[in-house]
Length: 269
Image (cartoon, rainbow, N blue to C red):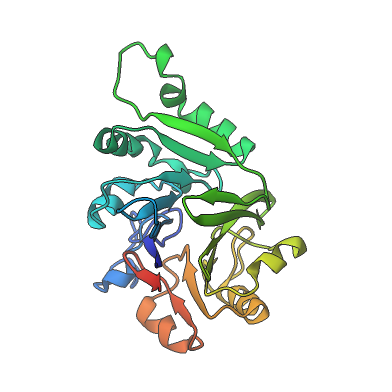
């Protein structure tokens, strides 16, 4: 019985390469420097079904390309961290999974995020009002509460409060068998009450936008300080800008800290 995490996207809101930029990272030929908008796939075994259980966290604008790249043909649900464009605009592509599985998809988010999804994607959630009978995603909205665990097909997902500047958002702790993973993207500060949920982690995925200060994201040094505090077995940076070149920073990091990159899969057996 194993659990794996695949980085569908590891870039910042503009993606890399960015439009109209000829910096060394945006023109890099290293595929690890080509970062689509942030999202992960979490897969784990189940005694109840023969196929892996698969959940996506956030639907980036590149969701279609990300899923094709990973040969993903079914999902069991989607969890949202917050409703910024780089985390939600791929929602429309969920309809292909509806068609492939002939089933609705449950989307999990706190109520304020669900309200924004319903407003932005009104044509999906209120399809009866559409002028044409269009092919849209069939989604079931499921509210979740901060620090209230939910059981999803054999794993426990706990929504964690993070601060994205002044915006409260969610990260997630996933506990499966004896393994634990936390995903903390788009974070500038971690509230004190969240820190106990970051103990005893096999893997911590954490925002590390760039070297310089940013009002709504962690810097590399700030992320390293958090890692030193919570002491996961392994840590991976995500939501990375074009200020950071993979081959430059990776060798300078502690042995248990790495830069994530699109397509990287981590497996815990």
